[in-house]
Amino acid sequence: MPPKERVAYFYDGDVGSVYFGPNHPMKPHRLCMTHHLVLSYELHKKMEIYRPHKAYPVELAQFHSADYVEFLHRITPDTQHLFTKELVKYNMGEDCPVFENLFEFCQIYAGGTIADAAHRLNNQICDIAINWSGGLHHAKKCEASGFCYINDLVLGILELLKHHARVLYVDIDVHHGDGVEEAFYFTDRVMTVSFHKYGDMFFPGTGDVKEVGEREGKYYAINVPLKDGIDDASFTRLFKTIISKVVEIYQPGAIVLQCGADSLAGDRLGCFNLSIDGHSQCVRFVKKFNLPLLVTGGGGYTKENVARCWSVETAVLLDTELPNEIPDNDYIKYFAPDYSLKINTAGNMENMNSKTYLSAMKVQVLENLRAIQHAPSVQMHEVPPDFYIPDIDEDELNPDERMDQHTEDRQIQRDDEYYDGDNDIDHDMEEAV
Image (cartoon, rainbow, N blue to C red; front, side, top):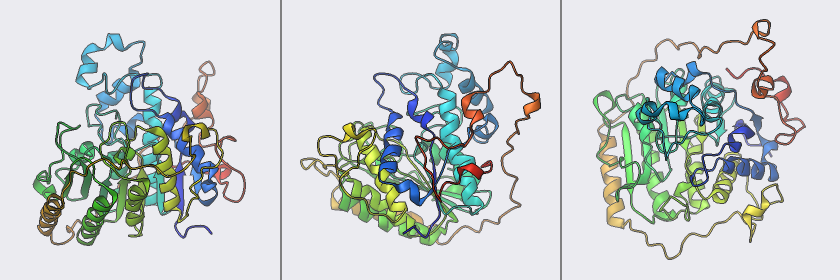
């Protein structure tokens, strides 16, 4: 039985083929694994699947500085030795390396969030939009940070603000959503809520409960700093209490939910003890508000668990229960030896978050919310036009310049990724801009 909400899902196999480097923890291959798991459970039959357009530089510059976007466009592994000053200026290096097809990677994951997911939500073409390749929440206006180059979340929120007076951003990645918070730190039109590990020099080092926003944005940044080992019961109880109060007081018109999977137990870079069930309970809870919802990925460095988590959360958004036994798919070997959706939470991992500590965090956050009292009286101004996307004039194309494959088959389905049948709408899909 199809879900009552219309769900749109964005995926391009090219994002999963880029390679950050042999010792780098970010493995975009996890996106291919997720997608094939989604297909193997036949979830694609319950939603509309699109290939995102590649975001144009002008779109990326709606938030990022034009010189930074131009640098990302220009830099390649072969030429980076010519730009040593710029690499330092834009914080590129070990965490944020230059690799083949870097800019195209950014264009695809950002395009899925900006003009495809957010645009469709704005125009009420869908109720829920999913872009697991997005959620790169650390990128700043003028620099890369924490494996993130372009902040698709900020760009997606800016698009949603064209149609909504207030947008709520919720982040359950183990790392603080600093890039998104920083972008909206001085405004009341976006409330950012981040649940994350804080202290012990943990990256990015921000996200204290005392960081609440400034000027018009004072009390519109909410941080829930947590310690190692938090479990399902503690996390979900705190999450539901805070988010329900936030929605009641702030009354957002739309929600953006960043579902970083590095908050799962056993993550290579994480230190929480959440099961997939606990993580997905947060998604289920946010969905119940029945507001336009944009869902993205984020961190997650044990890739088979990332694929498990985001497949389960796709099912949650589709009101579908999945059997625990993983069906056969191209990546089945990664789920050995038990081929199960469940993951083991580390039973010997101590929860360093005492009831007293969690209670104090809850009291502080609710106290800050009381300072707002009610939703800010944001008056909607005239909605600005959608981002200008230049049309491609075939008559002006240089026949000597081969059109890249992505431009040629924009949003055309691939036989190995999509499907036929009543839900196959790619054949008559218009430009998602």
